Structure formats: structure tokens, C-alpha cells
Length: 143
Image (cartoon, rainbow, N blue to C red; front, side):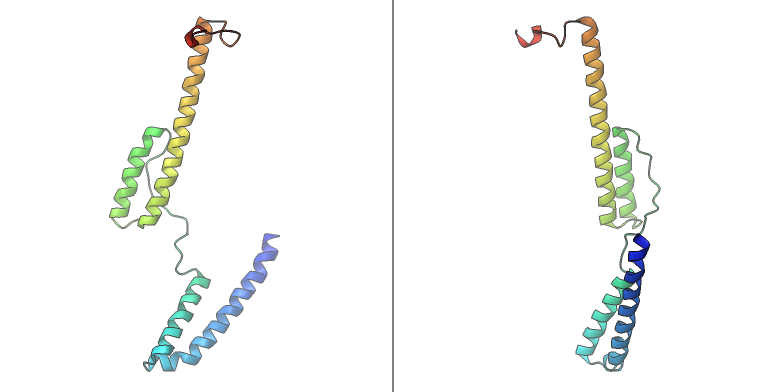
């Protein structure tokens, strides 16, 4: 089904590129001759071609070596590595920010999982000491 939809889209893209090429060709002499309107139009046509071809897009998968995230405390070295790579020009600032956001999301999930496990362990330990927990009144709440 996706292929069936992709084929007409690709055909339309090709038709649009042919049309843009024809328009660019029709004004290229004027643009090269210094006509400011033709130059402006040629630039807009070129920008549209670039968008259609994906030349301006940096949404391609990134290949960045980062420390492995396994627990919440791993987020600090990963964030530091992202800052270093952005400062060195290996990542664009918005790419580093998106990856830092993913790192923060992982950190929150890891912290939540850790807290859930701690609560489960505390409840289990408390239940072993006080088998009446969960069924009736509880001293710590002043009842």
C-alpha cells in the first residue's frame, strides 16, 4: 500500500522538477545578465528544487558515537558529549538539542523505573515487618 502511494508521489515530484527546470532555463539568461527580478525568481526556483530533492534537509540518520545510556546517571556524560560535538561542529545545535531532549526523556523514564522499584522494595520490606499492612488501620497515619 505504501509503495502504491509512493509511486504517484514520485511521479509528481519528477513532473514538478521538469517544470521547475523549464522555468529556470527560461529566465537563466536574464538572471545571468543581472536582471534582479530574474535573479530573485531563479533563487526561489532553486530553493524549491532543493526542497523537492531533499538537499536542504538534515533529517538523515545521524551517526554519532555517544556513551551508552543504561541508567539515569549515564545522562551526564551523554549530555557532555553532545555539547562537545556541537562545539566541535560535528552536530548542529538543533541536532544536539534534539538528542539532549531524548537523553532527558530516557533519564526521566529511568528515574521513574528506579523509584517504582524502590517503592516496591520498601512496601515489600514493610509488609514483612507488619503483615497487617493494607488491611485496616495503620499507625503511621495516626489512626
